[in-house]
Length: 560
Image 1 (cartoon, rainbow, N blue to C red):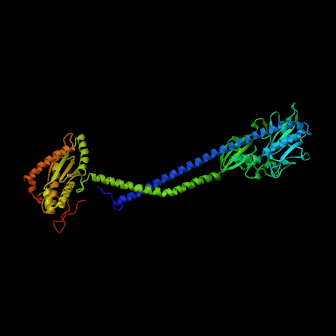
Image 2: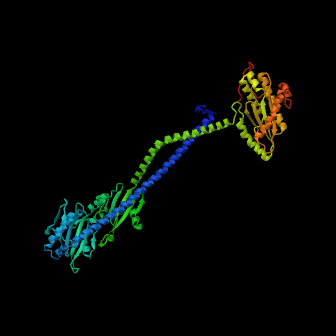
Image 3: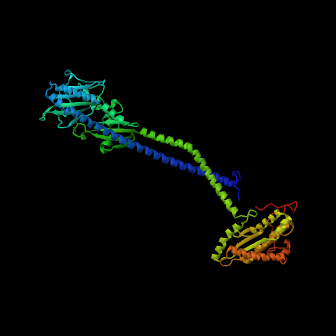
């Protein structure tokens, strides 16, 4: 059994190969890890962007829906006044007590709706009959008649007067004006108006209510938080009604200053929205989510405004910041895991080389005789079986020789087991030196060997064995002063032969040879090695190391 060696005990070539393989495995694992990290980066960024896009699509749709719902609610509430009997009779007789009742109703409506700024009844001449205001402190009060104004030149007066039946006029979103000037501080206003008619549909005047848009947008904004973007409200021309700062809002109401709007800040995006009616537009500036509010689509309403547009803008730097956050997380993960992965890859690569070498060593040991280095019984049978099977198929000659060392037990008792092992080693070496690489030699156990010669004639096999005998005798003389001998027998392959059958026949022949040797009838063993020559008349040299100078009792070094 091969003991598992320590690293320093491994052959240098194996250690070098393990080092290179470890580095290669580490690089492969690191490359795979980085590829996985890159894939995770793209997947996470794509998922974050998709979730962000879905969220903002929903938000911009919800904002538009809430705005439309609020307009419908304001319209319904406003119609309570416009359709009331007190408003109708007040406009019929401006000096009647019904005007006081109308004023009380208007105060109640204003108090109940914090978004309402003021509400008025205006007669056909355009003069205010009743007006209820909410001041800067939030107090609701009726305005005295001496402070009432004429609104006959305001566009909303004529537009509201045109309404019929249940129709309600919805004005443009604009800043409130007092006495022909924009009121300061700026107050974005949305007006709802409706004509009030007599029983015979004769116009008597209008009811008009101003609502604070800032409060409306705040109410809507409280329910939907735009934490990672900007919210805009635009009119149909692309001007800001709600922007990043108040200076850019309602610039169309100030003729003396350059126009400022979404159309000038993001012209390509605005053109793309108008030309393609796309709700999502991505550009270098970021991604924009548009949702129009069709004012005229509200039931029973007329308006000079075509639509308002709700826009959520996610700047590119915010999307880049999200990607940087993912990158940071992956870099931290890589810094923590890369050393471990590198070490594991390096260790795995080295381990594979060690394991491969160890398995090869085990495989070699399982079929190799530890003492002689030739094949053991298992190795002989494993190698001899396919050779004989192939020879049976192609009718090729195979000679199998069974060898037994003579008098090994007597030799061990006389010279010791170490010298006995040396005799076995020298016999195995002599056989190896006499055979070709394609031939087979192995130790079956003890002093018994087998030799398999492929594509060999019997005469050539005998010649080979004589050479082995001469070599072993000469080695014995040079080592112990006495010849070392062996008995052997051979057989040739017969049709459909097996290794077991051939070994059995050769063993029987060897036994006959050994019987002759023991009875003294084998003339070969009565000669000395110096009298034995090969066919060319040349003595075969020893293949085992000679006895070192200084004495014949010292063991020669083992054959590797």
